[in-house]
Length: 270
Image (tube, rainbow, N blue to C red; front, side):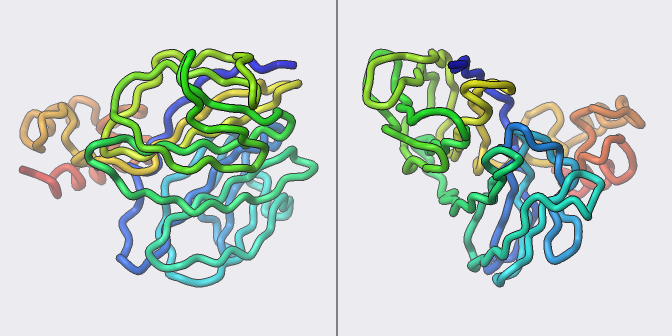
């Protein structure tokens, strides 16, 4: 059995959420089907998210309260539907729609996200999204179980812990058999996380942990040097990277530092 769990990249989807009215629902999509291709997500027939690959998640998008036809297709091929579901969204509620299971049995797992922040603690939950992995416990290394006996498609309750660095381990449920140490996991106060177990226990891609930041302090757009304000120093950094791709000055994430990014920076001028 392959249980070599690795820590996946952190997604900043919660911090990059689109703005919304107070009575809107907010929805993101998480691709957790290990053998499924990259996908597009259509809402009521219109593409909402495109080219989402395994382990990736979108930022939250705001939608008015109501029922929506959510259709997941192979990327670039709207006729190749792999999931179609009617999803009912309540006002002022956050949701994650997680594509789980193998491609042959792919299905949506709809989660209600409690993104309430605690200034004195980090809040963490665990989602078992590995279709062939046994039930597991997530525990402090050599210590207490944090999330116990979580089976495929089950979600652990939110747990509040002080911000810091933790050594964790994955155990076979109900035993002390450590299948993977997870040293040096860092979490911050005032931030909400989800830890997904994704991948295959007996095949490839191998089982791994993917951590998303669901809510937290929102960085000031345009504060490129991290000094808490947007000023001439940030403007200089943006101009240095003008026209470049893959730059922190690409504030709107369109792949190029240009006039739209300059507009966002100036809109937040201190």
